[in-house]
Amino acid sequence: MPRHIAFSDVALRQMARNYPASDREFLRINGVGDAKLREFGAVFLREIADFLAANPRQMFADDAFDTPRVYAPRGSKLTGTVLATLQLYRAGHSLDAIAKQREIIPSTVLGHLADAFEAGEAVDITPWVTPEIQAEVAAVFAKEGLEKLGPVYGALRGKYDYGILKLCRAAEIRKGTA
Image (cartoon, rainbow, N blue to C red; front, side, top):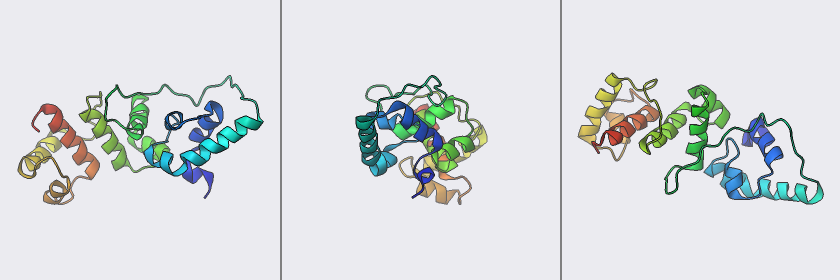
């Protein structure tokens, strides 16, 4: 598999500069979430450790690939992948730019932002959810419940993708209507 399929250039550069030595440190690499940790973490961590055993650690003056990390408060249910998306959102990246960099679809980015919003993070959902959309979807949630999105998606005949529905559900939960 070509390396760019597994990780972006930014992620590979961060690995080469930061030398992660644990799962926790590996999750701090831009674009690494739980799935990539499971699939590639052990192999990459072993290669990095082997490299450091044979070579001195290098220091870099240019930290252009390091960005401030967003950490979940203790006890938070936010995952590493949601936090990575939240970090890019807070850095001002567009939905499409986040999706491209994280190698996920835009709907998944919206789902991550919905998880963060539901958990109380400052996320402005209005670029994707107008008050009219929220009211329309809220009416369907009132009939179908908040637990499953499939019935809501079906009742709306696919008018809104699951990312939008997740944002609407998070807004309902934050309003306390759950």
